[in-house]
Length: 540
Image (cartoon, rainbow, N blue to C red; front, side):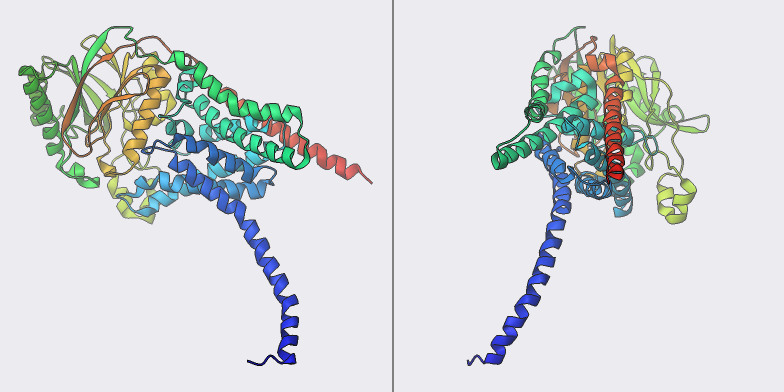
């Protein structure tokens, strides 16, 4: 090949034109780095949640999130926060679309990520303040507090605390509940980034303010030290004796939304498993339980209105010779209730608890006319709204005080605490996860129950229609659990406790305190920004 003078000249002319294009694309790629980092750090936070035991990944997730947001303007921070929220919540909540399709799942995530976007703007605002990791972690908890209350009475699924059932920070749940536990994790993550940032600065310039360095190290170390100091609050000691409890998992005919089409089969399955356990007790293979716990929706046939359902439960209670907490769907005065029924083997039903925190779009349908206009199938799935209960549910079962927290209620701080302050010595979380097949939802909810056990220092039982059912000690450890979609029972002697942890006694106060800290930091940041602008306007 012969290279002519003309071709060489053309090449020389092309090089100046190619260089600006390359620089433009390089700048665009650099701008994409924060966005990609925000989304990937959200995904990393998701990976830290159950069923995986990688709780510690929450720390680098928040470290990267802090790096992405520090010093950003509020508009950019909103977008980056939204991307972080999508990276976290899209995979975490995928189970919500298992049976109903991607529409509700994507809509839920799009709404919930707005809260994370607002948190992103808040973190960016306080990131220029001294001791910014403290203010930023408080802003995150303020976002969780808002998300737990709105819209439609809130959706606290995905609280940072619920990813820490296997982590070193778990004892902090007994100090101040899920807000303090979550605050510690987020603070440690932001502190990790601050320490790295200051170390890089020191290496480059040889200069770092001592106060900033001390605050960074304190943000990283204080949560760990606090968790170690809180260990004595975690105890399995029986304060009020022990009780032998039986957890029944009867299984369902099939998974999905249509499991309920064979309601009599679900009731029969739970009665059959109870009678099988009774035979083992009679044969001396298993200890006789003091009381028996059935899951939510174990009798969707109203036993007060249907004599055949009542007869099935009577037979099961008589065979085991112990009171049973039965999960039923009951109609009273034209209203539907998701109800736990205390069934005595001699007297029949003697007490009830109506679920208070009912699930939007599952047990009642907000904005029914609007949603019906969009998709009639969604309104058909919730033909009649459930009504809310108004009182805590604590059953006296063979002398033991058993607090009932029905399924979705376990995600809400107030519902669990109210049972303990009402005298519960043990907590039961009857649930029905058959609708969500074999998704991660079951394991995420089980982790919540483990956190609640430590938060209130109570044994927690989790009877589920299709699994995973479990018995959890007051230290959060699982001693027994079932598989999924099998009929099984768990029997164990467990400690009864009546003392209250600081978290139980303080209730909502730690959360209020952290929200006030967040408000103080945001006020300081906004005030500093306004003063800076005024000073700039005054300069000639």
